[in-house]
Length: 436
Image 1 (cartoon, rainbow, N blue to C red):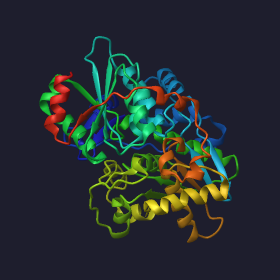
Image 2 (image 1 turned 120 degrees about the vertical axis):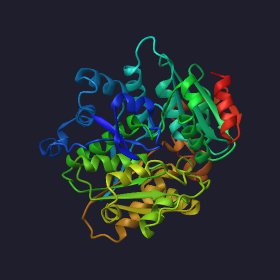
Image 3 (image 1 turned 90 degrees about the vertical axis):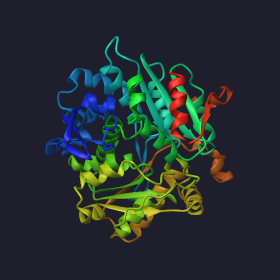
């Protein structure tokens, strides 16, 4: 399969080149030249397949012969070695738990698959791969654990100072080995801008073999389609074949993967883009005007993105058909106060604890369902992170109900190691050259 730049469809590269280059020099994002439609027999019988089997079939259709079948199966079985259950909370309200991987966040699907694909493509004796990643919270931890100890790779994680949770910061800064962290005195958008500028800097690209682990990398997007197909498979076992997905949205890679799955034939009635106060996309869906904004700090920090990179992929999949786009995707945004109220309602109604991002997706689903005919479709909201990552922003009585996983309990004994930089690119470039 060939992949083109969203800024220049004639610029086409192999999957390997798209993975390693991450972002084309024209600052577009890579997308498959053709989005394959899966055969109806497979789609109608998804409930008969396991998650790894679904993942292989989807990936095989997207990648073609870029990775031989046996090697692709090995990569998937190694990367996707945890489950993602759909849990029913009430009639037509289900939660897709995506935090059963090692970093306790949905980013594990993309980060683990991508790290193993990169390791597979790396040839012995090749130049070290330098992975740059900006994080608003969960991406960094998932990438750190995904690449930890991978030979001939080095990961540099940029995160906004004081704007990630304590556990998230420990996941970023306590790994050592081939993982290093930089706290940027700014926002996630500032971190993302530094990473993007590095990819187009001639001196850095001559000295280093740079790639990204952010959701701008196509190898992050592809594996995120797996859990949409798998969620539908679980619902089919309950004789439910109409589904609506409500997705917590920051950089819009998660919902972008869902739309890619729909383009491949997954029957989805509606996508709900649920955001916090960073409402660039919900406002666009209402007004038709896309106006990027400076990001605003909220208690759902992983979604604090004012100019989501992956929106160009979503727009590309609709080929500028704004009518179809606004019909298929609807947006809701919520304040911190509304988010906290949603956390409390979920705990009170279901005795179920969620992170603030998940709470926003639940609230959006409930608000959307109020205006819909009963029984029309089954609602699924995505739970993107374990609530133990956000104890300080949850109400005390809810926070006390969190069951802390074993892998988190030992983090607080580790020592943080992180460099500190401002938002200027020259300072970041100087750091990279000096510590290369």
